[in-house]
Length: 279
Image (cartoon, rainbow, N blue to C red; front, top):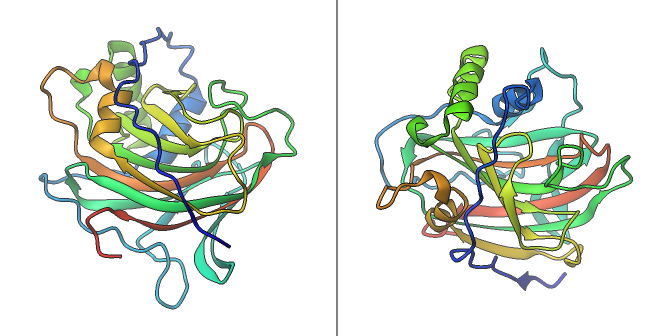
């Protein structure tokens, strides 16, 4: 299979995402579950990002530095998205399969690091399909993604609007985890043409950019390379004071979900690393 190269659009000139008011009722238990499922605490002094471990080991197995995180069983019995070491067109890669499921594969940085340029290759063989509702990242009913690569940041709580800050503190107390105040996700969208950017319909603590979408070629590798600092400044511009530093990175994850739409998808990810890391 021929490899095609495509770098996501420069979104530095995009308009900031307006803040939308939320009542406490609007932040339901699913929002708390969603945050709990995403989070993994990380702390430390700022430093250059250490190399990301490979997704697969030399023997072809999943690398243990990447661990599965789903919804806590006490809150949900959702099927788990499958992350498996496999081969496609003769190449070893991480296969990501959803079936009315949710799941993430997470790597926690040992010490929080300055945001760097992140790059990876991915492909989608089957977009979200066969579901009970169409995928739509802008609505709760359609909030599913066949593939996503996300980065969590140590975003200061003082920059978060009061209601969201209060709910986040409650969620942290319930979960016992230091839930992230800011997560940036790069998405392969099955519902809209790319690029699309916005806030997750369940929580504005998560903002997304779709790099691939409807109309993208299936079964072909696509190269991505993103400047985390620039994208954070664009997506969280409403919470980034003038001349303020971009928060440090705490974790990186790969995810896919189809629980809201009860659909299925098949995708692949490989070569996820910081741009300065050796290949």
